[in-house]
Length: 426
Length: 132
Image (cartoon, rainbow over all chains, first blue to last red; front, side, top):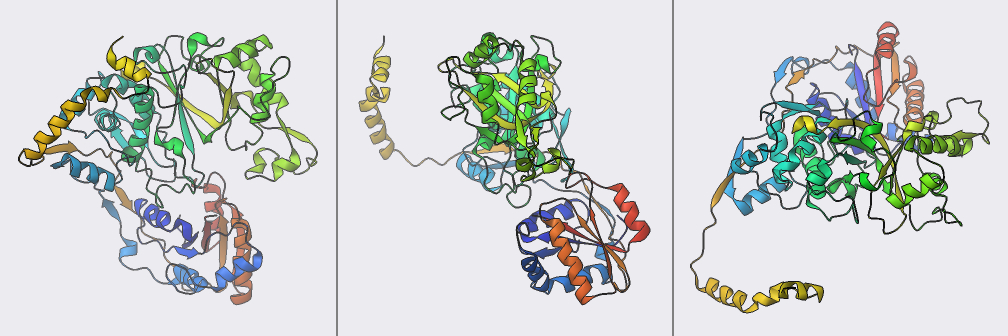
């Protein structure tokens, strides 16, 4: 920036701050630390932090801050140049058990047994695509803009697909997910989750499950494609190192293999999600979402059971805990979609319009949340005014999936990011 | 329907069918010489990190006396209140230091060129609060 700066960081982010400073070119940045958290503390408590010691160095905190801005620079602090980063040797040789332990101990797995990526297995996996192994697929980081982007090739993705237990025919879908550049292990303290919606005939070609138990562990392609996303997030973007590139305080079990949703197109009365996003019917497409997680829509008071179930009201009710940081991804059984058509919602867009206009929150409640300015930008808005959850109907996205054993839906506080052609990676 | 399917439907493991064979194999294994596990070679699954371009730190000030220090929040909750206490600390302990509070525009990690220009024009140093 060109002027002396002292970063003042809460200690919970110590490893993150130090590793991030190093990866951005300032390994000796003079970072000062306070106790954690500052959020929710009184003025007196925060002042006591400043009057106390840096919990890392043990020195008086504010003297350290002043020194950071005034003590002359060392020769190392003035250094320029370029430093290559090693990710280890190209191969590892040992017994299978020892290799399993090595990959696990070095953060390259999801802490479950992997398929060891031998050259033979990787070569077989690469037969799943016509693209050359050294073609660059894209870039990914634990949080775009906060960490350096790592790049990766088709071969890198194939290696991780092997480790996840994928078959070669899954590779184009996994490459399309990789091309989105969206890590499934965001560094955020929020413990975010991700979802991938798959449309097109490849769902049947791969025998994906979009019927009973579609989002559960009941089909190899759904399971392995989802697991591969987490594997490649760890290994191709450096995501998922607790304290450094992963700060999610509670973690999220969805991160094991993510929400992989093959839309039940043949039992849906509406256009597939991919067509809504501009692709032609029959194209194979993956669309990715990120947000907090998925939560129940069944068994609660919002089911909407009346003489005729009011599914639109039930969806609106179940989205009421949502905050404004992400949109709504509604996952519904075909029975719900068919019921909504009978209620007059002939398209997904009509349902989104209704929800955008009728899902409202009081300005008072909105102001009580993080990122409240996204809801109530105008300070003159009275507390009792009702404001929409989302400014635009396209904040709502709908996917029809499930085995029609009950008219249920689930809601995810997640936003759409991007759709990528799977066919181009075939 | 074969016997395996019948057993499955009864909730029994089809492995029951192989009981005696499994026992025989176990006895045979106990008598065999220990097998040394074979070594195999597996590949590194890591992607390509970019090289780090070292950035020299900006020259330091001789002192903060009569200087203007910008107190910059990156938008994490509570940073504004915390920086207000930093301003109080300077007022009490180093009263010649002038402080200016600013909220950086954009997401947490986004650059804010407009603010950077303002600090260059009218400030001498920055204390940036990061974290919850």
